[in-house]
Image 1: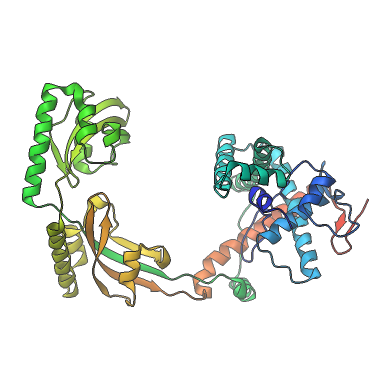
Image 2: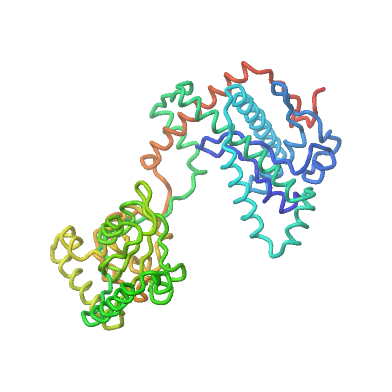
Length: 467
């Protein structure tokens, strides 16, 4: 059995899934190509020359150890092996993939396709971070590295970079050929789509339940008395800034009521349209160093100072004072949400109700066309329990972390699809696209084989390597 970390670090070879187009990928290589390293990661049949040449592609070779390592990775990833015949088939598929991967890499070099080195580095960094998170301590991580055949983290990172580079080259050469019009779509008939659906029906994943909504989000708003107190507070701060404008950052650190407080109100660089309209207009009207008058938005009262300006962007700070909210304000919001639901059920226009009452400043969409039911926040899932298409749901609370109180959701079910098996109608266009892609890819690979010397020497059915 391959060490657990080796599977995590190298990743399983990709086996083409039913009804999918998968670029052939390279076998994981845990260490330099040697019989000792390969033997640590695979369990080859007795008598098999572990580092024999499985195939020659142009001026490059694919080793038997690479095939076996990829087979073990695939099995660790869940490839089902119920008989010796299944294992032979898996080895044949992986060997074919490795040959095709090398053909694509060599074509990329011919076309002078270059990978994005910065993107590759980010991918390696992200992968290392994800792998490290699965180990409790650094010594445990390094011990697993050693068990997998790596002397150092740098050695493993180089391997990852090499593999990702090859995969990137494969993807980029296909993209380039498509852009250049050298990989055209192949037509697929309705009969072929139906045949593919029926032959792969049992292998298709079950579809998850999905739901669509349209909603009015009712924010809990402060009372007039609370707003008056907040306004008095920010006016006093503005007066203080008239006397000591250089204290803007210190006052923000002491008084501001949002996440920028610790940064002295620093909002960073912003383009037009990122802030609510009232804030946006004032921020882009200010010259550097000028402190704005008090402005009001849905979040409260602000004072703004622009620090720097560059084309289409400004770097600014602000001080925010929010009116306080309490349970009485929540009760008032809930009563408003109830009245909206009543009016909606009585035939009121959703468009009119949403224009008048929906909390646009909160960022929630008015319409959610389709969404996986399991991924909805718990309050939504609970409220939807037992509801039918067209039902208007009783208002339910949703935490508003920025305000520290609840807001209330009034929603109608506009789409409902229960979990179950996919129908041909639901997957027809996806199947058409995938079948066309598969055939286009196959035509490309066949053309590359005609242009390149390819000699397959490993026969999984006989467990032999031809000299």
